[in-house]
Structure formats: structure tokens, C-alpha cells
Image (cartoon, rainbow, N blue to C red):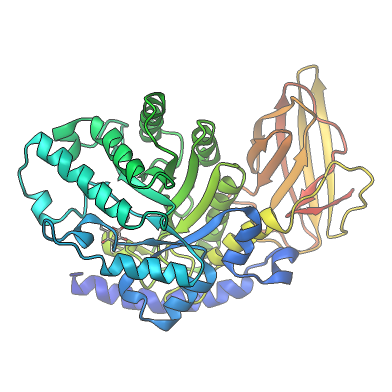
Length: 472
Ligand code: 9MR
């Protein structure tokens, strides 16, 4: 039960958020591509081959607004609580599948994927398990039986499962959960093996928070996953929960996704929300939109990143204010179920990655769209590198931007400034820095970088938001 004071603060905050989100939604400039189509999130995501999911709160499925958004905007659903151990087996041997079944049925009615969450976790265990004492072998059997029972029940219906959740401490060592303390590291492999035996078609994930960037915790996760793969344990994916803070999306997110993908694993952004200090205002909401987009872009830039799930539809229902006092507004919809700039940003990221493909910005014969003019200048060059400045004039007002171009084969961006840089093969994607996303109509954005492995070429073709720019 939340204390009364927090409730009052939330009520006040609710009104402010609603007002500021309405203004911010009007003020938020989108690229032409997404304005033209106005697709739902799931329509926008579909051509990218990624799913867009949401956590679903079972108790809210009776609310028609909630139900409608959950079904029309999202192509995947995760049970926020209904598939957790305490929900499905509150008394030992007595199962309650009502909430879990409701979600699976909802997903089937709406042609959605179900992301199974979660089987073995130190939190939200039933009392009998949490407080019971069991011999090691008994505990191992309880655990594997649980995994077997739950995965078997939904065999063929739940294509991805979080098998083990939050196994790590912040320093990359193992969390001292009941399972780890009694069974050691092998509890993880055993859980995955049991899940695989119960549904060989399901992709099995390990999921955690604060592992979005490259850091001690994600290093620990990476080493574990390598060991599991070496041992032939059936693990297929890594879930990066991504409970983030506005302005603090890790700069190494894409690099981290890529290193797990390079192991042959799927990566899913499993629980995305981006919270802020309340009250929200339009500048925080704009910044949040950029952050949502940065997370989406990082996933979309890596082939192995197969989906993004947001942890709750609306700020009204989010877990955040209950846990982080004074913080909130972390979801893509506001407290009145109106889409926020974060929603628009998420959609724009999918639209650009899917429909608004940047095409071939390197084709010198392409006349460009006329909505932007780019100058790509190599100001200094040597045999193994160069310094480049890029400026792009836009005819449309922007609140975030994404510029793309190709470098010659073997040439890579060594460092850059005034933007966030990522590279896949020869294709370089630059998104705005936190401070230079806003560009007025007729204004110019600029950034620079240094290459290694060779020099860039003067006059390289550039696209802005997927639209080829004319050469300036
Ligand atoms: O959103 C969930 C909230 O309703 C529950 O009270 C809470 C209990 O721990 O779990 C929340 O979801 C968590 C998820 O299952 C695992 N990662 C962290 C999420 C936020 O706490």
C-alpha cells in the first residue's frame, strides 16, 4: 500500500503531466515519413522484422481503453506479474493459471506474440518457497519441476521465455539468491535445460537490469553466457530490461547489444521505461523522446536485436512512482492514455528503419529530396585517417535527427563530436547529441568526426531521417 503523501503527489503530478504532454505532443516535430503514414506502433515495427511489446497488467484488461491500446499498438505482450511464480503457484502444488491464461488468450485473439516472464527469480517467489527450507536436491527438483510445469503448459504458445531473471549483482558477481546460495551457478544451466526439454521450440533468455551498457554487470552476464554456450546449454537470448533514466541512455548500448548478438544470441529490450524527476515538463518529455528513440535505434541497428517491450503502456499504471519516490512519467502514454512524445519517437524510429529506408545515400546520380542540403567536408587527411565536418540544412523543423552516410570500405569512425555515432559495415548513423536535437526550419545541424583505416571522401552523399539530401 502506497503512503497517502505519495498518492497526493501523484495526483498533482498527474494533472501537470497531462497538461504538459498535450503541449509537447503538438510541439514535437516528426519527419515527413512518419507524419504521412501515421501507423500504429506495431504497423511501424512490422517492416523492420522486430516486435514491439508491452507489459500487460492483468487487472487492467477489463479497462476498454487499456485493452484497446494493448491490442492495436503492440505486437507482443509480456505478463507484468501474472506468470511469476507467486502468481501461478501461490500454495505448493496449487496452481492458478487464470491470469496467465487470460493473457495468452488475449494475445491469440489479437495476433500477438507472448513473451514469457519469468521462471526462476529471487523476487516474487511464493511464501512457501521464499520461507521454506529445503535440502539442496529438493530445491533443485522444486525449481526444475516449476520450469517444466510452466513451460509445458504453454508449449508452442510462448516462443520466448525469460528463464532466469536478475542473476547478477552490480559488480558482475552472482546475486546471492536462494537458488545460487544452495545450488551454485549450476542452477542456471539446469533451469535452461528443463525449459528446453519442456518446449524445444521456445527461445530461452536470461534477463537483467543495469546490463544495457558495457559495464561490470553486463561483463559478468557476457562471461556467463559464453560459458553456457561453451557447455552446450540451450540459451538463445539475452534480455536487457532497460529501466532507464532520462538523459542517461548508456552510450555503449548498441555496442553491448552487438557483442551479445555476435555470440549468435538474440537480444531483446525487455522492459523499457525511461523515468524522470517529477513534475514532468515539455523539455523533459522531449528529452525522453530522444532517449526512447536512441534505444530503438540501437536495437534497430543490430540484426540480432529482435524486439522492444515497454514496461507499461501509461504513466498511470507504471511501477516506477511506487518504487522511486518523486520519479515517474516513464512510459510512452501519459496518465490519460494519450501518446507522449516518447510514443511518437518510438514510432518514428521504426518508420525510418522500415519504410523510410535511407536507400543508397552513396549514389551520386540521386538528385535528393529537396528537404535537406548536406555539405560533407574532409578538412584534413593522411594515409590512415581523416577529419570530417558535416553540416545539413533542413527545410523542416526537427526535435531529433538522424543522419546517415557510407564510408569507403575499411574506413571507420574513430571518434566524433556533436552527435552519437554508430557504424554497421560501411554505413554510419549519427544521431543528435542531447543538446543539439532541435533545429528550426531552415536551420543547420552539424557534427564532426575522425576516421581511421583510411580517409573519407569529400562530398560523400548524406541522408537525413532516411531522406537523401541534395549536395550543398
Ligand atoms: O512491474 C512489476 C510490478 O508490478 C511488481 O510489483 C514488481 C515486483 O517486483 O515487479 C515489476 O516488474 C519487474 C519485472 O518483473 C522484472 N524487472 C523489474 C520490473 C520492475 O520492478
